[in-house]
Length: 123
Picture 1 (cartoon, helix red, strand yellow):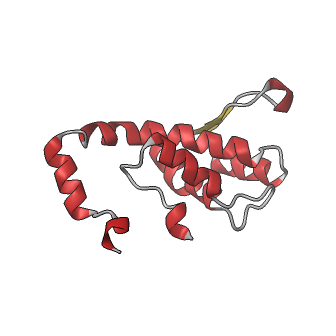
Picture 2 (tube, rainbow, N blue to C red):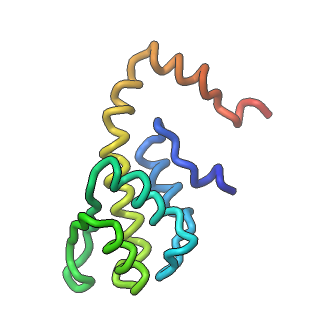
Picture 3 (cartoon, rainbow, N blue to C red):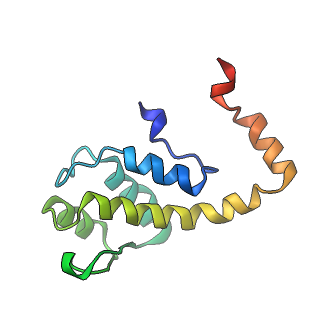
């Protein structure tokens, strides 16, 4: 289900990791790939680059400044889905950290719980 992989602004780091792990990301598939779409439509517009960290034997760390290069290398299977997901996880947590921090205040937490009630409590 989509709900299992939908990232929420206040998701904890563990939740982000779990949801990304479940996200469909087939090696070489650039057509139907939500993780790649996220890099294109969220990370590049907000951050302007994307980095992956990987072992030297798999090409080492790399920072991309153009989305098309990420897409091309993923399509040629030069980027492993696990490395793509790990890179998204790091970048996403960097974006979410200041938001999480702000929502630690009791009044914002209360507001968030009112605006976004826990669906599991409504059964």
